[in-house]
Amino acid sequence: MNFRIIYLLIFVGLITISCVPTQDLIYLQKKDNSTESIVNPIALKPYRLQANDILSISVKAIDPKLVEIFNNDPASQMAPSDQLLYLKGYSVDDHGNVRMPILGEVNVLGYTIEEAREKIEALLLKDHFKKEAGIYVNIKLAGFRYTVNGEVANTGSKILYQDKVTILEAIANSGDITIIGDRKDVKVIRQFPQGAETFSIDLTDEKAMQSPCYYLQPNDYIYVKPLKQKSWGTGKTGIESLGTIITILSLATTTFLLLK
Figure 1 (spheres, rainbow, N blue to C red):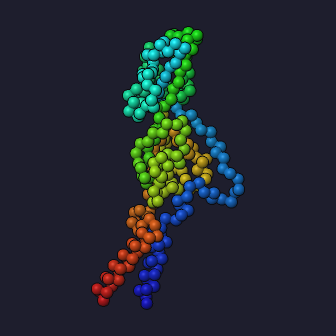
Figure 2: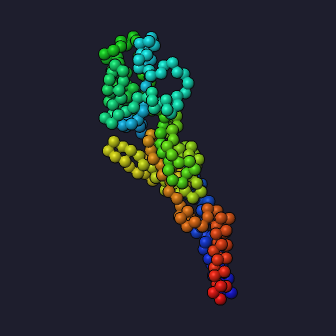
Figure 3: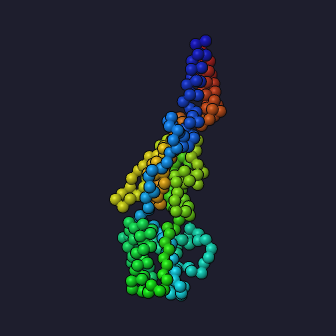
C-alpha cells in the first residue's frame, strides 16, 4: 500500500514538472486586467550603416547613358539572387567606405540609408553633373539579414527583402519556436558602432511590442534557449511524459521485486 502511494506521488510530481504549460506557448497574451490595447510608443529608429553591409545603389538620369557606369547590371530586370547581390552590390569596407566609379571612396559609416543617398547625390551634382541631368539616386540594403539560433525549427542566417522586420516575423520565417523553446526570455544581440548589446524579450506578453528589439535591425542575432524540460528528458507533451513515467515505474517495480 505504501508503495502505491509513493508511485502515485512520483506520477503526479513528474506530470506536474515535465509538461510544457499552454500559457508558455501562446504569443502576445494580455497579462493584466487592463482593457486598453497596447500601442507601441517607441519610434522605429532608422538603421545606421555598418562595416560589411552590402548596398544596392542605382543612379538614374534623363539620359541613361550618362549614368551607365554606376549601375553594375543595368540590363538585368530579373529579381537578383543572394549571390548576385553579394557580387554586384557595393560593400561597406572596414573603414566605412563604399568604392564607386568616378566618386572613388565614399564614407557612409553611421549614415542612414537616406543620408547616404543624399550624400552620393550631392557629390554627383557638385562635380560631375548639372541639375538639368535629372540625377536620381536610389539606395537599399541588399536584403534584411539576421541570424536565428537555438530552439527554432530552422536555424541559420536569413534574408528578407523588406525594410522593416519584427521579431515575430523573423521567427515565423524560421519555422517558429519549438515546443521546448523558451518564449519568455528570447535574446537579441545587436551590433552598434561602440560594441554589441544584448536585449531580452518576453514574446508571451503583449507588452513585447513596446520592446526596443520588437522591430529588428539588420544583422541582429536571435537566440532562443531551451526550457528545463529538454534537459530533464521527460517529454514535451503529456503522452511523452506518461511514457517516461511508466518506464520509470516499471523499472522501480522490477528492481523492488528482484531485491525482495
